[in-house]
Structures are given as C-alpha cells and as structure tokens.
Image (cartoon, rainbow, N blue to C red):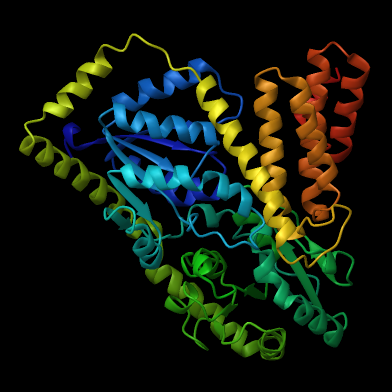
Length: 510
C-alpha cells in the first residue's frame, strides 16, 4: 500500500469511552491503522471548550481527506459543525446508529432529541455520505439524503478477550441477566413481573443481575443484584464476570426499535450467553429460534415468563444455545474479518468526489480552498451558544405544553410531569445551567442547576445521584467564582456525598 493510498480521517465524536464511538469508529479505525490504510485524528467533544478549541477543530478539519461526525454532541457544537461543513471543502460523513429523528414520546430523552432534531436533519441533508447500522434505518435516512451506506455493527474480539479467564459462577444459582440503559425503560417494564415471578417460583435458586440500570420495582427485591454501570472499555469484562446463564433482550415493536442494530445479541453471543429476544428486527435477522436463541413472539409478561422458565428448567438447551450463539458470532460477526468495508467505502467516496470535481471544472472546490487558505479570522463560540440556549429554552416551553395535555401515568410532586420523560428534561436544564455558567450569567445558571436537583428526586435512584451530584458541583463552582467560600464548600461536599469519586470536587476542597 503506497503512502498516497493512506486516508487521512478527522473524527469528531463525544468520548473515547462511549459505546457508539468505540463500536462504530474507534475499533474499526484501530484495525485499519494496523494495516497502514488510514491516519485518523480525533476531536472528543468536551463541555469545557474554548474559542481556541473551536479554531483548532477547523484547522484539523482542513487537513483531512474525510471528516466523520458522529451522532450528536452539544447543540452549539452541532451548529458549528453544520456551518464548517459548508466552508471546508472536505468529504463530510455523518455517522448515526439510531433513528434520532423518530424518538418515541415515551423515550426518557424525548425532549433532548427534540431539541437536536432540526439540526440533525440539516446535517444529514448536507452530508456527502451517511453511514449507519441497518438497512431499515438506512431507508428512513434516505428520505433526507440518498447517499446512505450500511456498515453493520460487529464485535471487536480484543475488547471481549479481557475477561475470558474470569472465575466461573460460584454462587450455585442460575443467573438471569440484563444489560442496558434507562433508555430501555419502556422496553424492560413488560418483563418486570415475569422476573419477579421466576424469582419467587424458583425461591433462592435464581439470581437476577443487571448492568446499566434497574427499575424501582426490583431494587429491593430478594435475589436481585445491580452491578452498576461501566464505560464501554470496562463493559466487556463486567459482562463476562457477571456470569449470565441466560440473557434477556426485550424490545417493544415500534419504528425506533426496528431501526436499532443487534448489538446486544453480539455482546451476549461473544460471551456464549444464550439469549431470549423479542421477535422484532434487529433480532429476527440474527436469531434462529431454538438454535442460537429464543424468540418471544408476543411482548407480554406471560409469554416472557414461559420463555424464561423454559431455559431455567432445561440446562441442555441452554448449553446448546450457548455453543451455537458463540459459533454464530465467530463465524459471521467479528470486526477484523469485515473491517475492510470501512476502508473501501471511504476510498470510494474520495474517488467519486475527484470525478465529480473534475466534471464541474473544480471552480467551487478552488474557491473553497482559497477561502480557507486565506483564513485570517477566528471562530467565536458565543453565537453558537446563544443559538443553543434559545433552542433549549424553546423546547422546555414546549415540554410544559406537551406534559399538560398528555395523559399522566404517574403522579409525583411535579404534577403533570411524566416520569419517563424526566431524563431529557433534566439534561436540558443541566446543559442550560452549564451554558449560562460559561457566560457568567450565574443567577440563570443557578436556577437551572437547582431545577436539576429538584427533578432528580423523582428520577430512578441509580440516575438521580449522577445528575444531582453534578448540579451540586456546578453550584459550588459558581459560589467559588462569586467568592462565597462557605457556600461553595457546602456544595462540593454535597457533590461528594452523592459521587464519592468526583475528582474535581475533591480538588476544590483542598
């Protein structure tokens, strides 16, 4: 491979530890780097950015052959990316692995994605290419832009090799397990009563373990263990050490879920965990019922109970499913065996762009290059921040109207506030607090952080500490900036009470 064939790629994504970043970009590019096929550089979006960071981003953008922007970052960052994509004259690829344009109203982050929806649509429309995970999601995205390419999710065996020597299950119980985040609350609730029924019926012979979240109904239930969360670099080991004998994969049948990938099937499968799955795409494309998993035809507690009981009572079936699902992953879904698809797509985009520019006489491309070479200006983040604040405030107003007219399944101290929508609203308040804090509008910032604390009391306990603790930390920083030391100290202590390993809070108390 000659040097001229090596592709320079600039990646803009949220975090080096985020599942989407690792699965969709960092792991594939890692293998291509080893083959000397790509030279990637990364911009991990951090809330503590400055004007200089923005200008540095644009400088690195201009040096790349291809720029890949993943899903979404802060709204002000998405406004910036949308604008730079017009100016820099590089191939711009948008990477998205969920149907963020069709988030259901019951989704915990519905209002958060509502704030980002228009900008995501605009970015998709102007991208040179969109990469995504499944044909179903690709078809929906093609309504905005026909240049959509499917790069399916695959398993990086190097991530899932770290826990192979972990100890076997020594508790003497059959372990029923689940992994997921609170975004799957509505998917999971249908099986809560089935899990309770199994635990009671098998009385001490079954242990239910969950990674990621646990609903209130199971928090204090006997023989239930919540194993906490982990970033994706630590998740494979946590999953393997959990020693699931049976893994659960419930999904409601709706458009948003049908656009998802089979990633949970891949993660359970590489660990040899036999799974029970909803009979919904994406699982119907991977699971052969009775061979490498069990498909549940009806999303009801009774049917899920029967499926779980079947595997609980049939150890031989569990063993057969375990062997078969591991073989399925090794035969079809290992990333190193398919990673050239990423390179081939990026290479073809470059070649097609060269042909297109040649046919156009390259006048537009030349203008863009000259414009950027003579760059004697600096990007200011302030106009993007102001625009983001306006959008977030607008969505909060809409949320009040929405929640006052929708049927309310849960009554709490906040009246019409629907519990399943809390996370998105809390995220918006937290983000607005951070943005006002950057602008040194401390009274406005305090209003939003105090609202986060207030709303957090009604969230799932496993999430409330994170957001409440973060709000206390920011309030401490505000009081510190105002030279109100006693109040700052109080808020940092409140933060550490909720998040004991918060490094910055500890530093501020020294």
